[in-house]
Image 1: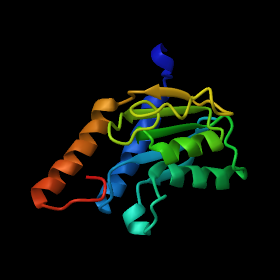
Image 2 (image 1 turned 30 degrees about the vertical axis):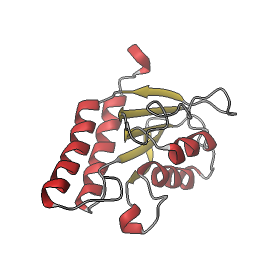
Image 3 (image 1 turned 45 degrees about the horizontal axis):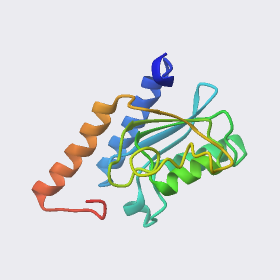
Length: 163
């Protein structure tokens, strides 16, 4: 298919969106991620730095941790990570370290995105591994979740560190 999109991409992005909703229900910024190996979800995560008191508890990191445990290897060769929002620098670096084959993300993060918006870390020729990047899968739905979350926070007068 065009732009590297494959037929299963929307299905797995919908699974990531469901996880984003779970995170939002817990007061977290609604970002969800799944790791897929051989057509099966082996890792899941949603943003949880507030609930876990851990600045590294991003959706991507939690999904990578679960996937590595499930397959018994920190290297996730052949895996695809689906995430609703463009990864930050920490998460992009983790994708390279884990040897993720493909990254599929929904919407760009213009403030912190390190895959396309601010940097090109995941597929940089300067690193020892390049991740194949596909962006824009269910972008409108992914962006709407984030925008609605912050709109409601502003109306209520609540803010998070990511505002």
